[in-house]
Length: 69
Image (cartoon, rainbow, N blue to C red):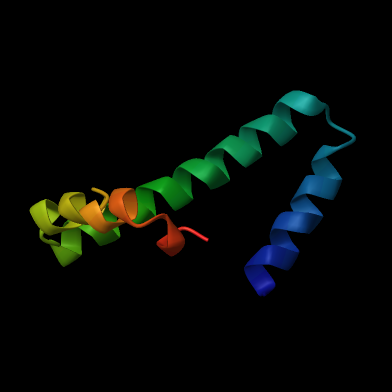
């Protein structure tokens, strides 16, 4: 909560400095979240084959349309 409050105060301060500073801060925050997510994935070492297999639809979805609704 404190980090979010600090981000809001920094964004409010940067509104008077111009759009480029605000844009740079938002890009930095999104990049930080992306970096942390990638690091968590690498540290946990999930079974990538199992994850990709779960993205494939099962046959019963195509054969039985009542599962969709």
